[in-house]
Length: 275
Ligand code: NDP
Image (cartoon, rainbow, N blue to C red; front, side, top):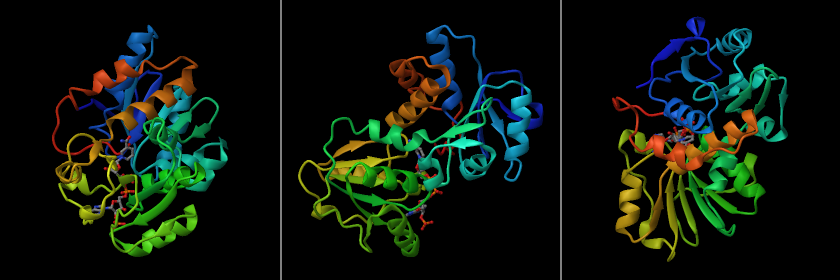
């Protein structure tokens, strides 16, 4: 568990993750390991910011000469409105997860971080489950890159809305027929819940991918059906690496960052970071 500072008591440091809650974020241990490996004299801390106070908090961190912050739930939209410079993708998904505090500039490394973890997979068909914040940016990015996206969500109306926004199709059954990628962007795994996937319809060689870190009921059942599986740790590393590279211009030491996550949160108590 991180030492968490309230934003009014933020220490002298260069980088931070802001969120609410933020105590179990894995970002400080990952970024601090990267700065140590690069020989950079930077410190990355966790800062608690209640909803509605994001602009004030970021103004304060700017006065303290912070260079950058990551932004986790539920602040990705509030942080966007503080930024004076954001790209079109952030506008489309109404979210930033990485801020250059000095320039008041924001980017979203979640979607590109996710895409990087797909390696050289050829865009084809994906069954995407979920319609929350991460689904929003990932669905858009997948469609942009030529994937055919079908969205299923527990609350069907949200899947309908997201499909319309992202240029995707919607399905009222989690039917993976024809999908090379079966992607769980829901937080069901954090609650220990499974999803109603019609596993018997999966195609050979399909990959089951869960954005949650570590084992999950979804990945367990997928493996039992013979699918290859991926969890959310590589994406966490990639979105952090892209943020670090954007802030510092250095090449991120991805292997060091991944290693720093191997031990998990320093004192786990059950909740997890949300990106
Ligand atoms: P949101 O709260 O924005 O969205 C949650 C989604 O999960 C909604 O679609 C919701 O459905 C669905 N959901 C919640 N509980 C259940 C359940 N029991 N069964 C079925 N569906 C459920 O969350 P985010 O998009 O921010 O995050 C989602 C997940 O992605 C989390 O596990 C988070 O940790 C992970 N994540 C990982 C990242 C990484 O770097 N690896 C980055 C970002 C996120 P409904 O609309 O019906 O409420």
